[in-house]
Length: 248
Length: 315
Image 1 (cartoon, rainbow over the protein chains, first blue to last red):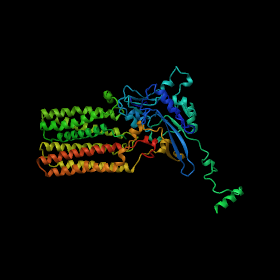
Image 2: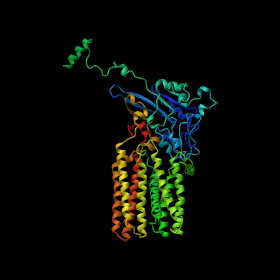
Image 3: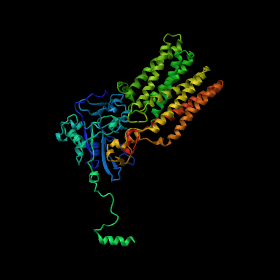
Image 4: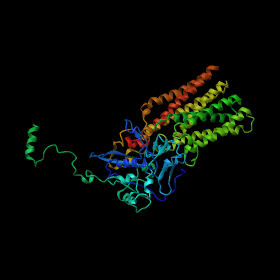
């Protein structure tokens, strides 16, 4: 049923630390690797070795450049993005068939492929671009938060986390229950000021992003040189003389 | 947004068909239309054919057409589901109206009932079609109060030019009808111009800064996309081909879709016989062509918030 649950017992999701992410794409690759054999398998590729390859990915890493308005140097922020498992998931409510649903027990948003007619309306309703249409299978696919890992009793407990989290070499991705106020992800979000993407849309995403920490060139470090000196100072008499001579 | 031709044909075809059925229901119910069996068959039949072809076309872009009936199940939350159900239900009164029109005539006790129900259900279906787009908060150009009036008035104008053409075919004179038809097309013109002005002067509240949440650090610009090639999100939601021709296409809509039908409709009032019929038919065809361009623009000019992650600063 495409009606959203009023509340969910758990709110499982991810914390993504934009301060730590180095943009290595390992999480995207491991996501593809795991999920092409997982619950929503396969993640079809078209023309994978040709010129115009395209395919299904549940996780993508964007890179942004952020430039302060006062002319101080900008910074690069690597920005992984996968399904945010929103509380107000419009991708679920617009679905005409009931293929899209949000689980009342853990808040994970899933697609029942056997009901999906491939109308693509859910992908139109998602502001974040989390839905992926599989042209081969004719159905919509999406991040499952690796339900086939996190509940997998055949795996060691330490491995029962989403593939993207398990593989991140920088430890920039964390998985946990946001409904539990003392969980690691809840504490991290509180301490570091974790935020929602496009909060103005009102989708209430479960996944949270931790902002980059203040950089060395920030306002707290105002002695950071804004430009290189054009001529040598008084402490370099020889260079000063050469500079004067050459400037004639 | 990618303008799928199946969806354009669906919304224009079924919109016009329901517009025609609405007008037949209203005028028929008021006793203003001749209860000639053949007229009923042609007029209601034309409406039903347009609606049915449109609905069939809407299933063309589906990944799994064989499961399309499943789309009728989620009426509690989904406008697409509601539209599917109401479009199916509309066949009931419409076919019954056709039956009494063809076999019994307006003496039938239930004639007005089926006429009114046909009109109401037709209007409701177009309303639901519009709401499928209106309810998507991700697209500013659709999520506004012009979308529903736009769909209703375009359907009504299409129905009006078609009804006039069918009436002319049967040499039925309705003195004031051509003026009503022109007024309806003019209304559609006004609504579309106001809609275009609205989307030209306003934008979505989300920006690249709110999409990334990095606005407090400065101006956000995409440095590197997630990959070097296109993906589904970009071909479906990042479509921009027609946008650069938007000005030209809007002028085509206004001439072919609105000005020409009005001029021809007015000209047909002074003409007689086959000339009047021909002018009315050309007016209807011209409107439909304009409506197809208008609907194409409705999709092509729609910008989705996901493009904020792919280099768009505003949507």
